[in-house]
Length: 484
Image (cartoon, rainbow, N blue to C red; front, side, top):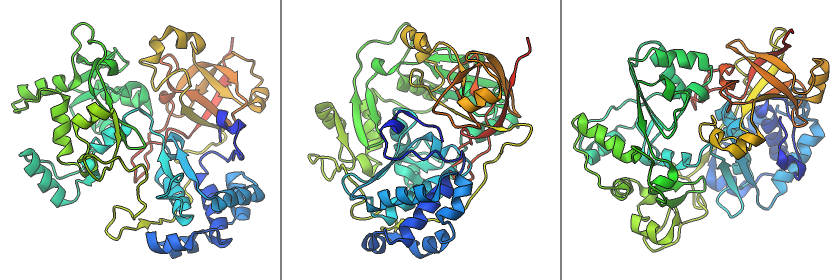
């Protein structure tokens, strides 16, 4: 819905209604399927569920979906034909796709677009989620998702639990863990009494931040391990000074599966320590026999239980700096393109899953007539705990603004830089208004990096039932003048 700099050079920018992704994408699928733009040979060989998908999208014609998604039928058809007729097409997406209660369905539609047109497993094709942080891929690969072990092995499969119990020589909980928002709910309900936060700032980044902060206040013990005193660290009982990326050696894995070696350039300041060292010292003090001498030994332990990186040794990364997984041998280059010979499923096929229309959890009404969406600014990253300490970046974007369309600026009789009150059912902030030509009428945008106008005081913690991701990109809001 919100334009961006790429819109200026794009062949198409579809300024659809917020939260109506599935309506638009299903209409595109309708055109691709019923105009014969599908790759029948690829579908037959590499997918399952096509007939169900074809039947499902039959009623999602551009004419039927246009009033819902706000894009003219001819525009939908032209866009679908551009994609369906392309020799090679890539799909990139960011948090705007996943941070909805129908985020998984959004992704399913994108997967269906790629699979039905055969745009997977070839150079110049594929689905590429643009991660929110620089090592999300690497962290996910090694198991920092509460329902999987390293290499995405589901905890729900007993054989996986048994394997890792044998590998680590310890008993493991066979039940999947909780996601971030679920953890906050469990803390609020006094089911969790202690929390260890490492490199995260939930007091700023969690939805419905007043609720999250109240939950953090109910803890018996809060430990924060970070490089700065973040808003969450201010609430902590114990703060452990960690190391920044130039102060340590280790690997980062990008979204293209490129494992990159990062080398220590400077020593940490003061009493700050290496993150792995802090964790190991805590482990020793609770009776665990952990004796790693460096990140290379930790990496080797992971490599021996992860097929994805088994042929990428630490020594190879030191020598080559970066290697893409998977590799077919210790001395062979990484495979830049994957899934050319099928998918990691029992039948080697990708599953086409139809997606239904689901309304956002909270829609505008007469009391809250606007849609609030949040995101980042170019100048400030995430909650601003690092970039706010940069004088240059702060001089460019020193204070928060709520971004409005020209039409809404006029209808509310706002002047540029006027201080207003932005409210949702969960909280309110005082913030200046800024005209933004990228914003459609009926939507307001508030960056979530400013501690003096925290956007996540306003956002909704409703979860996607599958992905467990909160609906940070959509909630009902209202904006008002502040009386003199």
